[in-house]
Image (cartoon, rainbow, N blue to C red):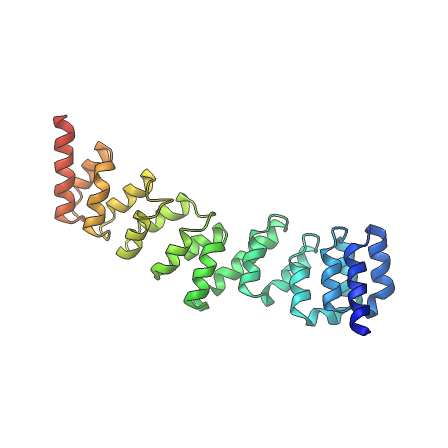
Length: 248
């Protein structure tokens, strides 16, 4: 019977109209558990006053992770309260929060900063999952990951841009495997700035760099042909292509 009563209360909280919702919460607050409170917060009429009513009137609900997450991720939650709850959220919920455009910008930025702080302590599998879903601020840090599988996952992220990717490709510490991955990317491998950056990086495998040279413009071929940091076969191939271009 108690379970059925709780389910009925949850249904009413989920479906109540604006004034009805607030009145129902005030009337039944002692009976509302974390599951019912989450349903109330998912009601489209839930506002900041309702959030504060739960937190002030039933503080024991904050012992439950699901309720804390629901409050932190509610777009009407006051900034101060949301920021206070961020440190206790799991990384995956921080990703969701940072990507939710309904959330206040200050809270979203704070969630991204928390994620960046946690990056070094995440397992490889977690970093891979994060790279696929993270926002731009986190990707700017994730691009430094030494694990090629993490970069491969990042290349699948729709929020990844050339602006985030190019500094990685120009770096002196990027691994040859990562450069080859980017060159082969269906999404980024055909973009001229990306092809040029990969071709000009001394750490790019020679075979990969030479495969990119035929698509470069003459001035860029000239820069490659005269760059002493690049492997001799790469420079020679660039000079050959330049000669062919001049001859034509």
